[in-house]
Length: 137
Image (cartoon, rainbow, N blue to C red; front, side, top):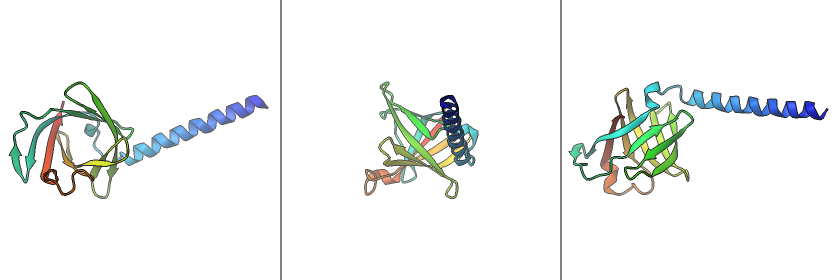
């Protein structure tokens, strides 16, 4: 009887894991497979004008299919967070690990993505008018 309980518990846990994975795949269904790769900063704009990023750190994003991302900082450190795709808006929202919104990916093409800074720290600042364009690494 004890062995049957262990087998049943194992089966329930396995089914739960498969269901969670399937739900994540469904939420990714509107995204092109090319999105799930590493992206490096190409250029930025402010109010539609190209800005000089030669002195800026050239960080890289990697988006994973499990709803997480890694931000590789030029100095070798890493930041992690989560992302959510809104199929209705066709926008990917990026959030820090603490759940706070920090950006929106408003365009996804095979050869580029467009990241717009967003969230509490951006509202009312000059960064509201910035866009950053990334290309595959």
